[in-house]
Image (cartoon, rainbow, N blue to C red; front, side, top):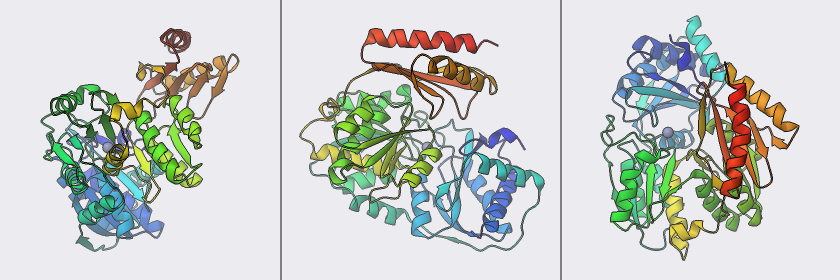
Length: 449
Ligand SMILES: [Zn+2]
C-alpha cells in the first residue's frame, strides 16, 4: 500500500496502481472499523463519473459492509449532493469516491465522520488501521436511495432569480452539469451548458475552473452568446469559477465579497471566514459593510471546522470552495454557489463587471509555486517568518503573511505538495514589484539545498 495516498484532506492516487482492489478493500474495512468503534454505522456512499469510480465504489462498499456498517448507495452524485444526503438521510458518515478536478487516471476518497470530512491525523489513523489488518467484522445491510431530486428542490427553494439572465455553464463533463443546468432553468434562467454530459474521460478539458486555460472555452462562449455570466464548476461540483460578461475571470475572493454583501444585508455584523491567500480588498470590503472578516488557514476541511467553531454563516477560498451556512448546511457547494451568484446578479441593477467594481482594487500576482522538498518547505517558511517578523507586522495563521500597510506577501508550505507557495499584493504595480522582490530574495536564499 502506497502510504502517500493518505493525504491531508483525502485519499488520492492513480486509480489503476494505487487504488487496487486490495488497497481499496482494506481502506473500506479500516474506515468501517474506525466508524463502528465510534458507534457510527449508518453510512452513505456516492461516486463521481470517473471511469474507475464504479469499481472503487463497489470495492469500498464490500469493505464497509464486512465490518457490519450499513451502506446507503447513492449512485453517481456530485460531492455536494453526497454531503446533503448525510443530513437528509440522517447518516452517521460516508465515503465519496471522487478524483475531483484531477486528470482522468486519478481517483480518490473523501471520508466523512458525521457530516465532517476527516483530515490530517485522522486520515493517518485510517492508514494505520488499514496497515495493521485488525478489522472489526459483521454483516452490514445495503440499500439504494436517491436524494438528487430533494437536493434540487431545496436549492431552488433557497434562491430567487428576479430577471431572465443568460447563463453559460461549463462543468467540464464532470458530475454536476445536468443538476446545475436543471436548477438554473427552474430558477428562470436561459441556460446554455457546454461540456455538460458527464464523461469520465473529460474529452474537452480537465474539469478545473481555477486554471485559466481550462476556462477559455467558457470565456469564448460567454462573449459569443452575449451571456450575463459564465459559470465553471469542477469535476465533483464543490468548486466554482465565474466569468463576467466581458470575459474576465472572477477569483474566489471577489466572488466571496459578493456573497458577503448579500449575507450582510440579511444578517448585519456577520462573521465571514476567508483564507490567507485572499486579497486585502475582501476584509476591507466586508468591514465597510459592517461585517466581521476572519482570516483562516487554507484547506476546505480546516475552513469547515473553523466555521463550525465560530458558528460563521459564510466562508470561501481562492480555489472556489464556497461554504454557505445561512439557511444551508455549511459544506462547500458549487451548485448552491451557482444559484446564489445568479440570484445576486438578477437583483442588481448592474452587470457582473460593474457589480465587481465596488470592491477595492489591488494589484496581485497569481500564486507563485516554488519547488522545494517536503522537509525543506517548512524550514523555508520558518526562516522567512523569523526574518520578517523583526521588520514588519506579520500574521502567522498559516505560513506567514507579511503586511506592509500598502500591500502584503504570503509565504506558506503547501499541505499537499513539496512546494512553497507565495502570493503578493499591493496598492500599486511598483509596490507589488518591490514587495515581491524583497520577499522572494529571502525565499530563494533559504530554499537553496
Ligand atoms: Zn472538487
